[in-house]
Length: 277
Image (cartoon, rainbow, N blue to C red; front, side, top):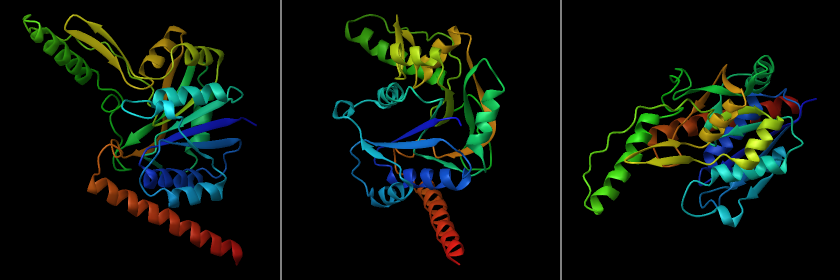
């Protein structure tokens, strides 16, 4: 039996996290050897319903180490630590809190699809904003042109401060798609262990004269794995990704979240009634 260690990071997103967990276990009931851990970044929202469900399922909810709290994107380092603490696993399942499983047996099918491609280090689920339409590859999976312009604008401001001409010309994008940590399954290979230890998963960037290249979480790791002749692939299974929901309260996203969450809560209650009867 394969051993899968899964992780998600809650940061004032407890309702989304509860939906993730409920949908995960409802849509993937046959997955064996799966352990899920929730890391919590000192959330200030109402965590109790999520905590209650996690306790019911035996899912540990652990506080994020204090050294990772504060300004900046620390998810990569939290994920790196988790991998290094669970090197016995066969696979790692990385999940954003703001996704929901809407299709049956997503994880087991992703595992089979990954096993069929020996030179793939990981597999990512397809993403959807609404649970129906697939999000085109390359849109929110990675936005290199935007990242180039962002780095360029910073460089322009720095040049302007010291009286130099501000004539930046961002380089054409050369960035390849990353494997997105919102829902991906990764083999715990020797190459992955080594890259995890030395490179990690955090965002990274290069700085050049008035231009640069930026990688989001898992971006640099993806490129380094390619130097090992290992690629990532995409599953045929799709998940709902609210995208940015944890960064800003969006009424439309919250309404969809609450509707789905209530459906999964009611379904569990009805299943429990049937089991008793």
